[in-house]
Image (cartoon, rainbow, N blue to C red):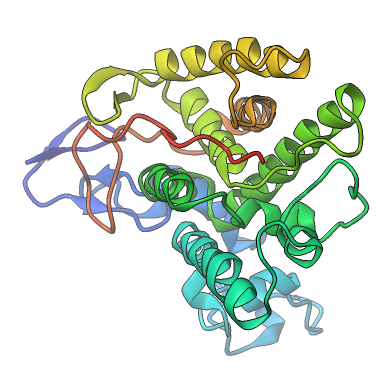
Length: 315
């Protein structure tokens, strides 16, 4: 038996909305009956559902006014329709493909070791070469080692799908890249100002993942998570503690202390988290609120992992 998220009624045979992921009774199962945030994706201000058989349905004047390129490509029936709702797993796959390029293809087939100029130019966002704009993206998916990518993969696997389900794929993708790029640039710019152009560069998806965590914290701050799979706590406590640690450690490294900073891009983590928190405030009230971490297509229990245990790579 489940409880309807709209009216609170107990339902023996509940319905789960594929748009927002929440559970409803028979009366509220239709998107228009529970004010589903996914209704905005229909892009149909006239209130007419377009079957796709007649372009005049979309344009009462008889002409065809097709939607945006992203809607046509990623929408149902589009060439990349599979990726709609699955970008968290796509990003996971890209991370591991990039990892294979970093440590197998480039060193073994191209003879470019991790310290070579070719390897650095391809994967590392560095303070000496901020103009290499492709590294703004490639550095998000590149990682400093197996432990680094393993922890980030676990965090993205658990937190990514539930946030994507409630934001929608386009918003989630924009958030991931925005948080990742801002995080990387914040780190290398601080290094450029304090150390110079020969300071350490940055790699890793931690900043992007912290953006995802920031949105989730705003949407449901009391969501129960487990730090390192052991210690239960509300999500807001984990986020606040991580932010405080990043501030202390990050500015310690920037000042040359390095006592707790080590090889971790703390300023990148903090910047990504701030992007996520800001975006969470923007969309709160316009999207559904996740009540639990979900795995695959089903509804999971209230538990889950406790955030990115792996540090953002910085070397």
